[in-house]
Every structure is written in structure tokens, then in C-alpha cells.
Length: 337
Image (cartoon, rainbow, N blue to C red; front, side, top):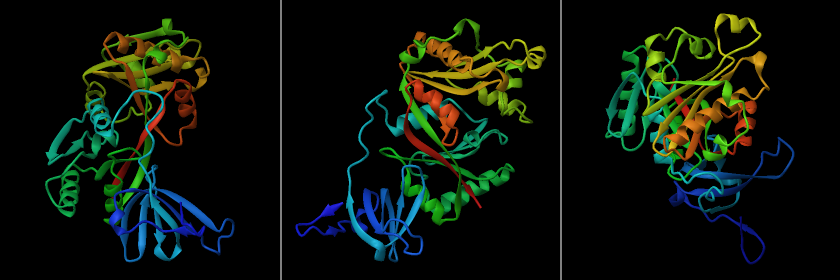
């Protein structure tokens, strides 16, 4: 916060700072109790009719009345990450999209409309990576119509929390009545340390194709048929991993104890669908799957790893923390209502 010579806090932001990262101190609602002040850091996404809108790294929007402002200033972008590979948002956004390609797509300016019969939001949402070539209201109407023709809800995937992400678009979607439905984290790490982990990789079988046994373990398998298989098989260099189950009813049915998927794309290796039989957890099988896939990705020339995990999946986050993954940015799916 800015403290002037007399020791008083000062508001040093104006509506001209919309789009910049700011730090704000405001008075709390006296009826709530507790601390008198609260602090908010994020991107100032609008300042209209006496109300400021700040979008935090998590994608959460905070509305602040001008009358509650105590202090405020523009702050530098979040400091560069101290571990893991260097990466910017546009590069990661395109790499992650190539690893989960839709069955059908159409360009709208620099936006990509994606559809896959409803199999996952990622493959059934608009990916905005620039100018849609239309005023935003017209672009949103086009998105709604496009998905309605396919019998699908209209989703737009956005990102927050890193340089070049889309806090202002998130705010405009909220103002237009779109609802933020799901948020997740994109995490990155150096690949070699994952490949060096001590894990029972001898139990892991790698394949270029997905089979019925692998799908039996995959939690997203449902009534998606060819759409599911086509999305799973998409990507520059795709590998599937499985660990045979032992001593369980599911072993007799042919379901693996653990599975995983990796897509190698230049220097990047993306990890997805890492799942373990609940009855065979805490045996290091998920680590073995990722280690085996990491070694194969290293052989293909990759050096960096990425994955996506929902923010409330504490078990998975703890595993990835131990492997050296750090959050690069958050991504969100906004649904038209």
C-alpha cells in the first residue's frame, strides 16, 4: 500500500488503470465483524458507476465500492516462477489444446469453437486466444448458436493468473450473464526429475493405442463412443500406460490397477487420465505410471512437463507437489445461462 509522508494510506489508482494488476485495501462491512480492513490483489477489470471489479488469480471476481477504498496502487506482475521450465501463457494454451483435440472445430477469428459430442468441457468449449473478429456481444451470440445447433451447452474456456491471461474477458463474460462453472490449475515442472523417481516402472506397460481394459478404468468412460476414442487418440505423440491389477475382483474383469496418458509435443510432455483402482492406492502406482511415461517422453526429446488438476483435488495436488509441479495459471469454463 502507498503511505504518504504524513503516514496516511493513499489511493493511487484511477479508472485509467483498468487492465493492470493492483493491490487494494478496503473497509470491510461493519456488520460482518472481524478485521476492519481487507486486502485484494488481482487485475482491475472494470471501474464503473462507483464500483471496482478485481479478478484474482483464481478467477474469483471481487466487487469493491469506491467509498470503501482506503488505499490502492498498481503492482508489478506476479514474480517469475523460481522452479520448473520457463513458459508463457500463449505457448501453454496451444500445447494443452493440441493434446486434447476435438472431433469437430471451427474458427471464429482467433477463437476456436470445439465440439466432441459432449465428451469433456475442454473438447466442447470455445478457446479464445485473440480477437474473435466480431464485437464481443456478436461473438458470444455466435458461440451460443453454434453449440445450440449441436445440442450442446455453450462453454468458453478462459485463463487467469499469469502474464497475458484473460482476466478482462472473464469479467466481461460475467457481466454478460455467463457463469463460471469449473476451475482448474495448469501446473508445470521439469521432466527429468519425474523420470528419475524410484517407482515400480517394471509393472507399467506402454501402448500407442487405447484398449477396452484401459477404458474400463477410465472414470470418464460413458456413452461417448467414438467421440471419446478420437479425443483420447489426438495429439502429436500419444502414449497410454497401464498397470495390471492383481488380487482383486477387477483384476479378473481385466481392469488395470492404474492408467495414464501422455502427449509429447516438442519440449512438452502433458500428463492426463492418471487414475488408480481405489483398492490399490498408496502402492506408488500413479508415480510409476508418470515415471514410465516421463522416461518415454525424454527419449522423444521432451524436457518439460505439464498437467491439469482441479483446484479441490487435494490428493492429486499433493502427489504433483512431491514431483516438483508448480501452478502456472488457472483455467475456467464459463457457461451461457
